[in-house]
Amino acid sequence: MAGATSAGGAGAGGGASMGGSYGGINSPGVEPSSCAGPAPQKAFALSSAASVSAPGPYVVLSGTLPDDINGSKVTSVRSRRLDACVRIDTARGVWSYFLAAPSGALPITVHAESGAMATALSAQVTVGAAALPERDLVPDQHTVGAWMFSWFTGDISWQCSSAWRPVGGFKTWDGSVAWGRDQLLDQMDAHLDAVGLQLDTPTGTGDQGYRFNNIVNVVKAARQLLEEGVLPPRLFPFLDTAIIADHYQTSQGAMLDLAADAGRAYLYGHAQAFYKAATTALGDTYGAAAFARWQGGLPAVAFWHSESMSGVDNAAVLDFKARFQADFGAAC
Image 1 (cartoon, helix red, strand yellow):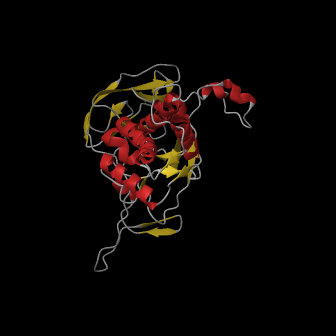
Image 2 (cartoon, one colour):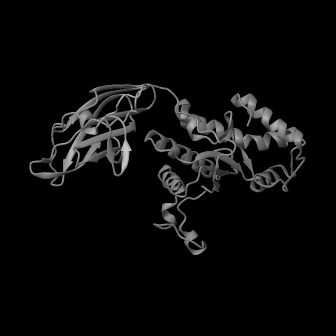
Image 3 (spheres, one colour):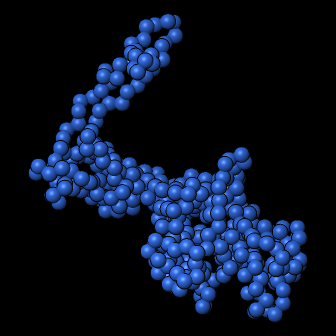
């Protein structure tokens, strides 16, 4: 590998520095050429160790490339996971790999334009269980958020009633993990920091269970991206109080009353169901990085309007927070 340049400041006592002028800028320190090592060998090889251990889920490997394979130009380096996680620089003859890989032997292959391959490499990777760093929202931090419906099932009738149409048509909006992944990537392109998942059903069973299962699929998609070293928008439940209250009215024959224990438990059960399912899907490694949390690690819960409920007061809010604290060990 070519050595990195290093520019050090002049030492105390006025000693002369061996610097140079680059683009009209005086740069004190060592001439870059004096730090350069020998050019890397033009071969497909590992420069990093063949055995790598990491405390968390991510590993970094690097190596060198041949000029060609049997006269054909090198086009890609691939791992067992995703080609996108391997970067190549054919001009410099190097490649690098960054991903959350399961422990074990990681095969790495190089491919030419002709389809030819050189002898595969293998790195022994050992990853730890250290959690990814939290991404808490902090005061004075510019934050952009939105809320998201995930109740789609691939129903093509939306094409006749919607003012817009997704690429591929509504048949592709099926609520799957793959669909959730595409949505999160689009939201990243829109520079969203946090996304509330519209929630009105607290269980994955029954004729409305798909609405909850689709939310869990979005969370699973977020984990996939985190496993690949990509940071999707932080997620939180957005309780659709209008639909939740309507469900309560239908099942109980009365308005949802937050002055009563039954009403409080019913509303809280939606946030409880989300965080239980999401915590299971993300595990200890990815939870803090995936959830929208306020400074200090307080998980976010959002609500729509309160007009569809009665008994909405500070006592009801404190009861909600106390239930959350009892279940998850932190206020919300």
